[in-house]
Image (cartoon, rainbow, N blue to C red; front, side):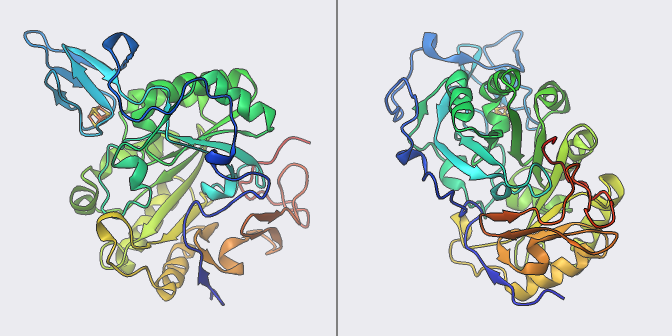
Length: 377
Ligand code: SF4
């Protein structure tokens, strides 16, 4: 039973005490704020992964399973890729809408280099249309942005120093060309790359990016196709395919939001928990998030703490490492050894205490592995 659970408000409510958000970071940005003035075609970056029409200037984008057919002068569903005269351009290339220093736990990643700091960066655009999106200011519209190069981000992360770069806030897949370029530069510099993604991506694109990705938090929003179609404007199977491609190729953690009246039925939760256990393994860290009023559901009520507790128990019956990522609870925020029950990692907001891990990430009491990756001693 989870006792004494309470909310904390926002998934990005962690704040590192040393530095605040982007506005307080005097980073090495080379160009001033870009507020939407049109670029000339010669300044724009041609997109990858698209096909030109044989008899017209239409193009077909192959980046994600929407496979948008885009006439000249129009944009795809994500709004981040536009056809101009038969050439598809990435509209958010080198555009950063938010930069911050985040504890890796804020993504959330609880089993990958716990206690590390990441340079969290995001642009704008998304290929899903979730009515509950709590980052809609970046994913569903175009906020003010700054131009930044990959090397500038790498230099910022090294100077801090941070473990690496986390691509988050909006959907990194529709920022693909810049994410790939930056991830390659970061890896060459010895940094880690982490994706926070909804996973709606063409498999060949994902396989191209994966050699440069060290860890992923994948958001599985439901285990039912109608939910994805109606609430997210996308579909379920490509997301599950992404999860199976990621398994074993990178460190993987799952996030699942509990949305009252939509996906909070015990049978659906049990089905999703069983799917994760069977296809990704019962040691896959799984983060359950409470919904808070946002975006198109701004007038709805948040997920009740009692519902989160019930969901925790359902997922715990199938999975060994389940967390309530925005509800405070000692039992549901901390990591316990699955063999001897010792408390391995204690978390209180930004404070992370690796109180019972040996240098290899195993339980210091009994030696059991708990799917925790720590820095090499
Ligand atoms: S990435 Fe954007 S333009 Fe390309 S298929 Fe997906 S939604 Fe359409």
